[in-house]
Image (tube, rainbow, N blue to C red; front, side, top):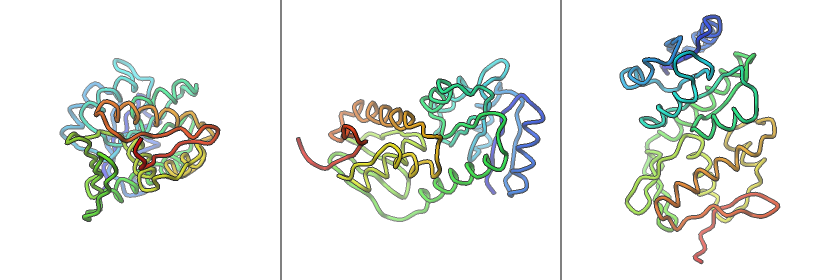
Length: 228
C-alpha cells in the first residue's frame, strides 16, 4: 500500500483529498502544517507528498527546499496561488507537479497515479544500464553516475534526462517533452521544460560531465553522442 502525506492548513481540503485517496486504496497521513514534517518523512518514509504552499509558520516552498535536501520523493503542490511565477518556482525547487485551487480531486488522483506508476517502473529491478560518454545510468536503481559521482535528479528531471538518453541524437520539441514527461497536456507551459533543462545542465556542469543537452534552435532539445 502506497503511503501519501497530505499537508494543508485547510481541514476541508485535507479531508476531501483523504476521501478520494482512501477510495483508491492509499494509506494517507494528514498534517495541518509543516512544522514536524521533515522528522515525519524520515520516520514514516512516504511514497509521495501533496503539499500546500500558503501555510502558517513555514510555507510549502520552504518545506520543499528542506525536503529536497534529504529526499527525492515525489511532491505535488496544491495552492490557491495560481500565478505562473509560483508554478515555475515550485517546479524549480524540485516539485513534480502543481495544481491550482480549486482543483478536481479526481485529477489529483490521476496525477498521483501517473507519478507513482513511473517511479515503480523505474524501481523494477533488472540489470540494464545505459552508458554515454562519461555517464552510467543504472536503470534498476534510477541511479546515475558521472566521473564516479552521483548525478542527483528530482523525479521529473530524471524522467526527462532518461528519455533523452534513451533517444540520443533525436531532437524533441518542448511540447513533445511535456507530453512524454508529464503524460498529459500541461496547459502549454513549455517554459517548464526550459527550466528542467536548465537545472539538469547546471548539475551536469557541476560534475564536469562531457554530456550536454543541446538546444536545437527553433525546435527544442536533444542529447547526442558526438565528441566535439
